[in-house]
Length: 90
Image (cartoon, rainbow, N blue to C red; front, side, top):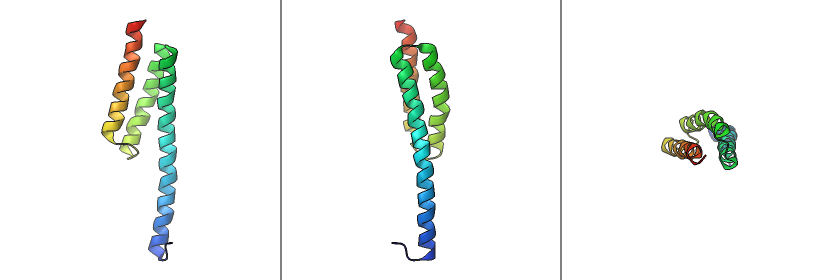
């Protein structure tokens, strides 16, 4: 257990940052799930609007260090291609 003043402060800071990161990660996953659900229903307009809402959340998560920038870009790219594919099959 931390026994210096600075170590105790560091523990408090880490706990606060962990809680914030957990919220951001959860929000990111929720928005991704909304896009996935819209894709599974086959409604392209709903999927496009869900993707438009999810993209800034994903990129902000990358900016804040929740996920790597390339990871966020890859997720956006793959979701975009799946949404685009909905229009081709219909």
